[in-house]
Amino acid sequence: MTTGADHTFIRCRGLTKVYRKGDNEIVPLAGLDLDIARGSFVSLMGPSGSGKTTLLNLLAGIDSATRGTLAIGPREISAMTRDQLAAWRAREVGIIFQSYNLVPVLTAFENIELPLLLQPLSRREREARVLRALETVGLSDRAGHYPRQLSGGQEQRVAIARAIVADPPLLLADEPTGDLDRTSADMVLDLLERLRTERGATIVMVTHDPAAAARAQVQLHLDKGRLAETVVRA
Ligand SMILES: Nc1ncnc2c1ncn2[C@@H]1O[C@H](COP(=O)(O)OP(=O)(O)O)[C@@H](O)[C@H]1O
Ligand SMILES: [Mg+2]
Image (cartoon, rainbow, N blue to C red; front, top):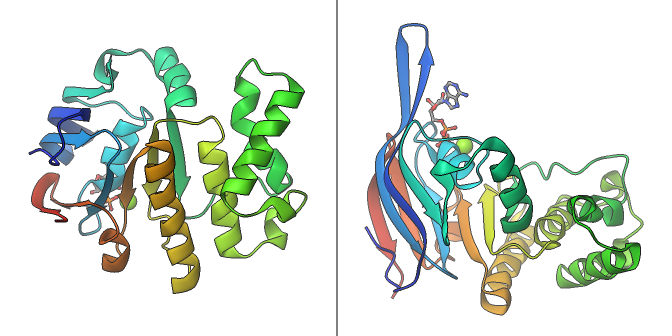
């Protein structure tokens, strides 16, 4: 299926993932065909075990497909080596997790700076980018705070700043509001929406929360590794 717009950014064809455990086969993704338009905000829902995280991991180049093809922008992800994938991911993908995954012994500033250490940037340029990312998520006054000194919503906004500090065109979020109260969740969703409109980021967000899913332009529903339903907001 197509998500409506003309400029496809992500293209999956027959995307299949098989895990083998002894004689058992688990097929979390079973021949997925999917096009996602550049600059769209897509939510991904489905029962537990329906393949949502598996799909995100393939989109992130963290895991590789057993069969089928996956292209993101001009690149054929399914044809890249591990090293190529790692370099590509550092430039092109920002990932946000339910549990924030901040490094507890580093400050907000240092957590956000981490992805930039992989890039050939001067210290001054790194600092400028981290401060800009902190400003984007509304936490300029928390740069020196450690994760334990922040609320859950603030921790997630630091994690988002870390995900966007290298300005990647693709943002992947796995239940980013799962541990947050409604107010903090809405703040995170507002922020994702703003990253789409202001930076043109393409966002794929897994969620169990129908209110969060409804913020996306396209709602995909996975069931047993296949697309069960697609709702496109008018
Ligand atoms: N590394 C793995 N090895 C074996 N089975 C796995 C692995 N990762 C996921 N699975 C299985 O694949 C299915 C889909 O998992 P997942 O994509 O995490 O689902 P969801 O995120 O929708 O809850 C589940 O049955 C899960 O147990
Ligand atoms: Mg999952």
